[in-house]
Image: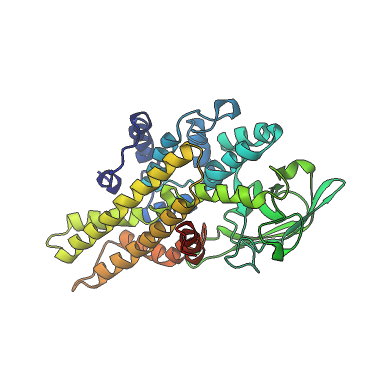
Length: 385
């Protein structure tokens, strides 16, 4: 039994749950022998070969329409898949963004040609997307966009920079939020979303090494990049409305709860195997589970809203804020538990996983929207500002 089996307070439809045993059986075999410290990277881990394997099983785009190469299953079926991928530490980073938000965005706002070209390739595990939102000068202010696309006879001429762009050096495409009219002072007005082919001339991508030694974040430079008129997604100037809906997909999923779950399971396994572990360890495990269970239920409830076509911006911000706070708490609390012992010796692999999570966890409250931005969204939604 995994930790996931202990926090099932919200019932997922039986037809969606039916896929869980098959997925677990596949992952147990596929990930046999992979160190837990590697599994802990999961949705940040990049393995294009693994992505193609699960695409062959129909597990990328499983909730997308069959006419565009998807599986035509329910969004809850996809939710179960994601939980198991994270629960077992599968390296899903290659296709994660394309499956989670790029394909749904294109299906909602794109032209028929864009849908036919991009979505089937995503479902086959052949096209990977990154997100071009954050910029160096804007900090956490997403509306302070300076990257500009100017309309011309060929379509759009793109100039500017994006930063913290996950796996840009390994992706074929970026969906970029850019300014097509006005200036930064216009805030939400004049913003548009463009599909950028990252193989085009004038694009430079520089990976950024993080504290853990990984290089999945990137800075991307656009120097007179000529895009065709078909690069535009949706309506010009409607980028803010579109990206707000997109962020609900990014902020509410299980990846905002389970980034530390591999470490949690390792630690619990160690406690079970240890004789006479402190009562404080049992109390800590209870505290973590008591916070994780309702958060999972909230995340699933948001999935219900998304399934009904709603855009639960405030609810998604709340789950992301509370979820990443818990994700950051877990490695800190487990470290305190281990090193407060008279004999702090723990399995080496557990300590390696703890080291990785300790180094990377500060980013949990940055990616997908900073804590301050999310609290502002929540406060506005509650009528407090």
